Length: 281
Image 1 (cartoon, rainbow, N blue to C red):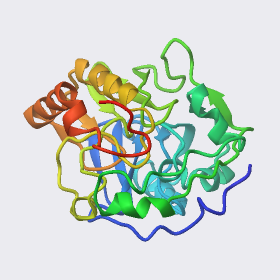
Image 2 (tube, rainbow, N blue to C red; image 1 turned 30 degrees about the vertical axis):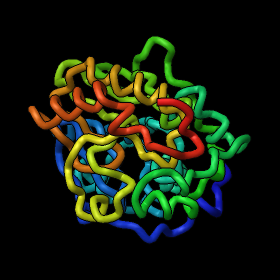
Image 3 (cartoon, rainbow, N blue to C red; image 1 turned 180 degrees about the vertical axis):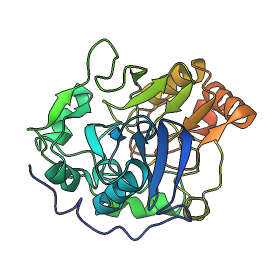
Image 4 (tube, one colour; image 1 turned 45 degrees about the vertical axis):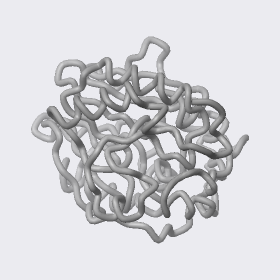
């Protein structure tokens, strides 16, 4: 495995939720690493086996594994890791976790270049319309990591090998290979950065974690047409609860109304007025 010196960097950003977690369902727990959420899937009342969704901010591995130990016990058994995508704030703890738990890492094939060390992500658009976080994004790491020996393509039928009650959906736009995860029986959605429940380019709202439905982070979203189509796809699921890569989980009418409004008015409320990835609304 090959890590990036950039993705090992300490990022001086945090939120009031950092270091805390919450149970979303008996088999789903979320934990916040600075400004990015990871998810531990598995029911500790049934088994110490669990699956990790995303791997948080750089240098977060120890905290994630401590959260797992607290939830599943000292003999917890990580089965696999699922990635919504490979941006630095979703793979920051990945290599350190794999060194202790060498499990399969499932991702969409379109994310493979960024996870096999062959291609870096596009540079963030620090000049995009947006708040202070957008301006800070020029310092965000984009260098690829190489986890080739662990990397496995997500099954073409939408299934998840270690989670028979869940499925994955291709939700590109933020990145080409971005995916989301959904459990039909409970209508629980893990949306990654397909949309956010905090205005991610506003430093104040990121720090305070003000809860509201927004489009994907403007400074790293490269295909706004695909991003809109992905939001529409997720809105059609009518999730009862949604947890995203950034922000607090949402449920009920606030989620339903916010997600439908985002889908219906995406070009006006989500797409920035200018930016290097903005072509037409």
